[in-house]
Amino acid sequence: RLGYFPQYLERRAMKLKNLFICKNTEASIEFIEGFKPDIVVNATGSVPLLPNIPGLKENLEAGNVSTIFDLVDHVDSYPEDLSGKKVVVIGGGNVAIDVARTSTRVGDYNVSMFCLEDRANMPASEEEIEEAVEEGVKLDCGWGPKEILTENGKVTGIVLKRCTSVKDADGRFNPQYDENDTKTVKCSHVFLSIGQTTIWGDLLKGTKVEIDGVRVKADKLTYQTTDPDVFIGGDVYT
Image (cartoon, rainbow, N blue to C red; front, side, top):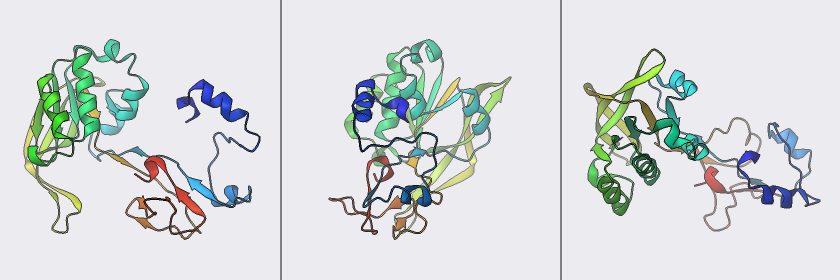
């Protein structure tokens, strides 16, 4: 992700004599051990969490469906690309609110936002929600994505299914749906902002690092993991 770095930071980093930057390289345990490090800091970041629904993969590849990373990367050209189109935002957190509000500000006055939670339990702050509604975002709670509809290579709409519960009896995220209670919303573009996840692969194989689901266990103050020589930071922890 060196492309995300400002040039002045890249130039400053290049002057450090003890800094090694390896591009297009898999950070396997064997590769890391070759540097004989005393401490390893894992800050590999995260990737967007995507629902396993029909119509997603081909529309992501075609650019008809976007993640929050796509918006961040192309916000300068966003008005030219999407202004005036009907946009659907999937998600109920502050980032989803940001996506929806950005859409209204560049001319997409027909912006609809759908989330699993009911209005009272949305993850986004109350202030953010109220401001989004004031800016014209149409908020519809209690729905999850079921299918993205396509015609001639373009998105024509999205099918949503009623979410009957978001968490199980133990308080864990485990959404349940009524597959027969659905509705179809016409749109030209879909933004997915339902969270992020980490793909570990074999990166932590052979270490003492413990993972709870997809999140690494670490001290909240020092960020030291259950392996004393491995520390964690950034999106990969939060």
